[in-house]
Amino acid sequence: MIDRIHHVGIAVRDLDKALDFYRDVLGLHVHAMDTVEDQGVRAALLTIGESEIELLEPTSPEANMAKFIERKGEGLHHICFNTPDVDGDLEVLKDKGVELVDQKSRVGLAGMICFLHPKASRGVLVELATTMENYRG
Image 1 (cartoon, one colour):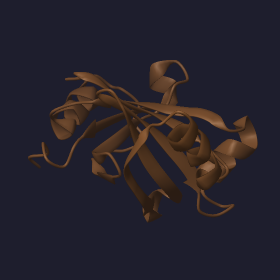
Image 2: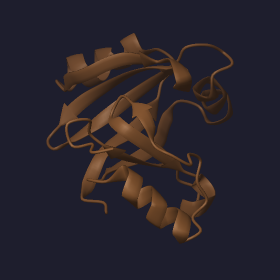
Image 3: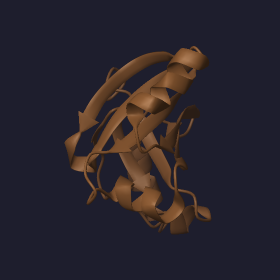
Image 4: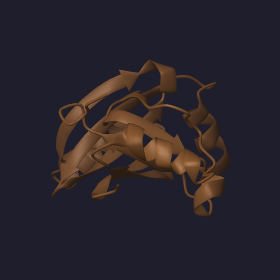
């Protein structure tokens, strides 16, 4: 199942200003950057060791990320665990009765991803990801 922390997601109002700190001050390398339309975010993955930090800026005031920032402010949004088989793990979690956000994996900046509902994990939004180079779906 899970073999490492893939990334920690951080909600930000302004991705470029956040990059000023994480990239320019801390020296983290931007591994990937894109707009993920179905999630309503502009995102950047920054490498730190074998893990990453994902910065997430809402693309509109109606986006879920904008609503999150409105309720809770900028900061920690989710933790993502790497798994070699996101689809298989999703089925195992369904069989265990875990409450899910996603019923099947979907494409995200980190690869094929799915989210578990925060109710399942004591209030923490958990994401599972299999990188595209390892995805066998």
